Amino acid sequence: KILILDFGAQYTQLIARRVRELGVYCEIWAWDHDPAEIAAWGPKGIILSGGPESTTEADCPKAPQEVFDSGLPILGICYGMQTMAAQLGGATEAADQREFGHAEVRIAAQDRLLGGMSDHPGANEPRLDVWMSHGDHVTREPPGFVVTATTDRIPIAAFACEEKRWYGVQFHPEVTHTKQGQALLERFVREICGCDALWTADNIIDDQIARVRDTVGRDEVILGLSGGVDSSVVAALLHKAIGDQLTCVFVDTGLLRWQEGDQVMATFAEHLGVRVIRVNAADRYFKALEGVSDPERKRKIIGNLFVEIFEEESNKRANARWLAQGTIYPDVIESAGSKTGKAHVIKSHHNVGGLPEHMKLGLVEPLRELFKDEVRRLGVALGLPREMVFRHPFPGPGLGVRILGEVKREYAELLAKADAIYIEELRAAGLYDRTSQAFAVFLPVKSVGVVGDARAYEWVIALRAVETIDFMTAHWAHLPYEFLDRVSRRIINELRGVSRVVYDISGKPPATIEWE
Ligand code: XMP
Image 1 (tube, helix red, strand yellow):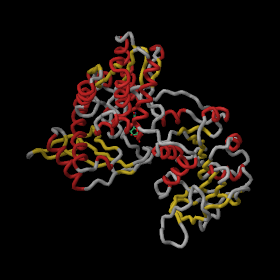
Image 2 (cartoon, helix red, strand yellow):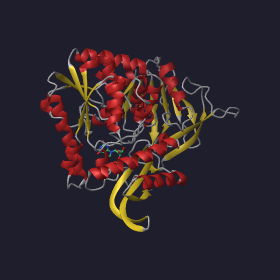
Image 3 (cartoon, helix red, strand yellow):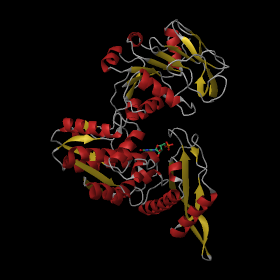
Image 4 (cartoon, helix red, strand yellow):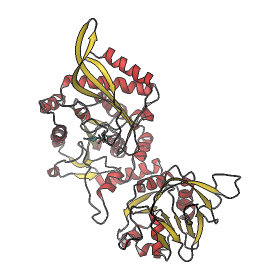
């Protein structure tokens, strides 16, 4: 396994995902993590991430000296390389201009990390297309190091001390724009650190099954199944591990996607044989939401009602000792910042967060170490349907925040159908997997239309589709006009009460992905 010491770069998680894709387990710890724990954890190599600070500032973050004394291979990326330079007797310099984007590096010496690589075979000297994002750069390599790559802008784009197996690159191997990035990381973790590719879906499943059995013994486990990817994978995994000791509670809020309740039951109860208690709670939800139009209040009501219902159901299962949750690694990293670390925050997702303490259940979180793409691979390996595993994210409050203002049953039914038509057409056109999230929104305004010969005032449906990597920023998807035309016609023709369809062309920021 590999340890990634995080200096706060936005790409740190990407480094970890790339290393895991190579079949090697890794974790991200804060740069100031207790060195004794690092030694005890026993990584085979250490990667120092990039970060926003400058090594030219007096109190900048530094790698623990123990890391350099450990005898382990080290790869410094961007700030990680700069701090190696600064700490090991080289020098860095702050630049007045940031370099951001594509760059070409010339290989200046053949080391184990970069030696023999070239993106331009046949050129006089080996060159690599890389991606840069930095202000500072290294101006003098530390004693014992050689410069292994340079660019026109920076004389030291990579360095190495082969004897100690220490390497630094100024560019970012973890982004795909660096063509040899994955090959470089592979050389580091597999060849230089000597890690085997053991981190595979099958191994993870076997390992988790053993751990879950060990943890819960003969006890009963209860899980809130939402139909989303994470809780679905937990359900499939736990069922495989402990069979009938698992009980899932699926709350049909009336605010789910079209026929979602039936699909969840078909997949889990009928197909996989998981014990699922379906609670049809639509009436309760619509009643609780009557007259409420403030989005945050709606979210609260929906979340609280879930907790209430979940508790009612689990109280009926007196033997339940464990609560399973679909917490994934990014949730864990986000809740464990530098120094303050180790905070163990429960995912603030409505269908798991805020469960009352008095329930006194132990937590089972088999996805705690996994990234979303790994969770999906596990889902496939566990036999879940592809459409479920690769589904777009769906917010906890569901259609409750996609019906603007007051939520009514009539609106929810119209919206679910409109959304189903949209998604069906996206899939048919091969566009579903090319958008990150797509959905319909119900606008409670009446716009004029002509129905037959008469004027009618009917509702408006908005369509949204975005492309994004991290859901923090997003572009609206440039769906083809013919496609939008087809969807609009179908919605208006097939749904009574809708006479106008609009397409949302706002980016995030400033708009959010959801409308509320
Ligand atoms: P926004 O609208 O903030 O959405 O740009 C970013 C991502 O978060 C999802 N989202 C939610 N998920 N409960 C959730 O579980 C919520 O209240 C909620 N609001 C937004 C949204 O669907 C998108 O994927």
